[in-house]
Length: 171
Image (cartoon, rainbow, N blue to C red; front, side):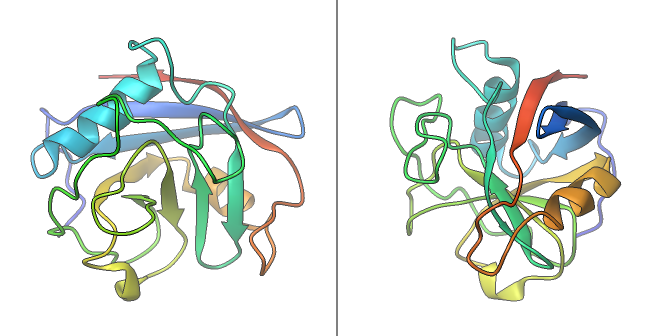
């Protein structure tokens, strides 16, 4: 799967702060042409059009050299989350593989348990294929993602507070 831009795919952003200091912007293209339900959930959580979303949520789990996880919009610690569909939703498909850094994928607690939690890969992670739905990629701001990735530990606990200070849709 190449990371080509499709005009019809939504593009969203996160502005990031680290311990309250501006750290830059991450721009993401969502694979609506492959996983429309998953992409729509993430897009709507970025825009907050349902009355809730990623604004002021944190990256609660960071494993250096592997991934950065966020999106627990209810508890901020990895134990919660909420989808726009009122409940957890199914794994749409596993067409997109975890072939390298910069892929957006759904974090889950097993099959068909998707909500708002997501992660961004920092490297190839084939062991996640067929377990986590990849639904987008980083178009711009991979330097910000790498910086976030340096702020974790083996146990996943971030060494600083990484917050989504603003988010929305570009197109």
